[in-house]
Length: 139
Image (cartoon, rainbow, N blue to C red):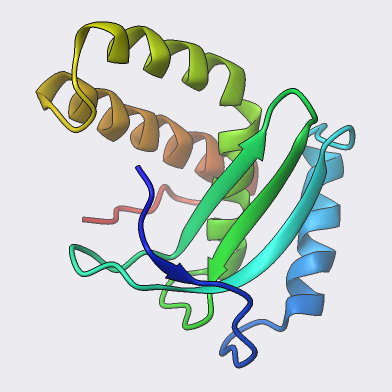
């Protein structure tokens, strides 16, 4: 589900783009994602339904991706970066499962919503395990 964003925002609070790039490189090695060409993009999420801190856009065939991070972070930025990278780790399984669900259900219906909610819970748990931290509870 695509939502409106303002891309490549110049002003950013929190960690600098350089600091985030160093974290990306470190975690790419730790998560065995070195075959992926991953970029960081600082954006302003313009969602009205909830405050968004990160997103991941990928091309699985080319193994390229863009991790979009909020220009106005309100959560632990390393956690969010690793969370989005965990989406890369599970991307093949996630894509397959979501496509199978969408063959029989509409995007955003109850079954699809259940799937997305449980995907996020699993990714949060994997993120907490990788970071050796307590799992974040975001409501």
